[in-house]
Length: 349
Image (tube, rainbow, N blue to C red; front, side, top):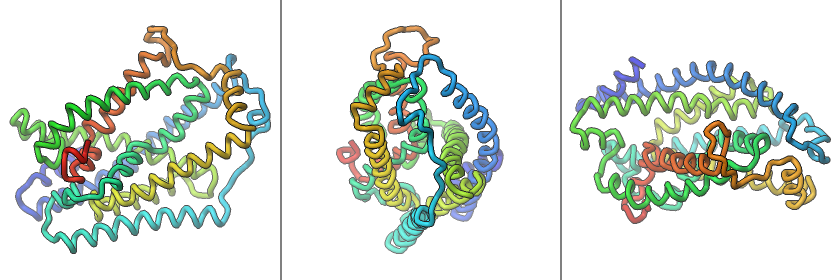
């Protein structure tokens, strides 16, 4: 935390050497602390997985009858082709990020923070849209939502109503205010609004700490998935993914991140769609999927019980969706940089 505080202070210094020191020491320290957090997350996640497995096998109200459930899951491991695809994906992501950063530095030498953090405000809107779409969906969502619905039912899907309501607030209130201020970071808003440099630095520190905690989980979730189908340990997966992402983000800036996101978003959504289609065919069609879920008491959308002790109700999921979109797309630094990268408020909307 002390190193990050120094990094935040150095990045606001007028001296270029001091700013560079703050930037790279901040990136390095963030990577090291994130790696440390993974160990804490690992222990907690193993406890959760053990509890979840027990819940899935003992929950009395879930009907697990059906050929897909009772036949069990095969022991799946990566083949040579799978390893090649995985290595190729990591390598292409790395190359895109580094090349984009190198090209941007050549074309916009001396562009400063505006070019590095906002892409010169001239990014392709389609690419930025795909980056926004994929940037908020991590392995936590892909693995977690599927498990959530399997164990507790579909009530959580009603958060889409809250997402729509939060999107309206973002569209009509938040974006017009932030995009017209011509600032680089949301922490600058705190300084302008409350005329306090200290508050700006505290805001930056809070952002750094929250991202360190989030990234520990984000890195651990896919490493756990990889560890089940490869000979890679969780630590090896974390170091590979964390290292590659850290390098192309630090070198490529927002341009490198956005164009790498395009590849990763397309791959991720196509992959989920293929799994969805293949899974439905394997069970015997969508009607069979719905019937199995209904027999297992998983189909539930309009739970009106207002009890705060209920895991999910229609009210709580709508509120959750409302705040979810405000966090990921409203007052989120990474999303704000993408909005500003397209150059105009109209395009950002």
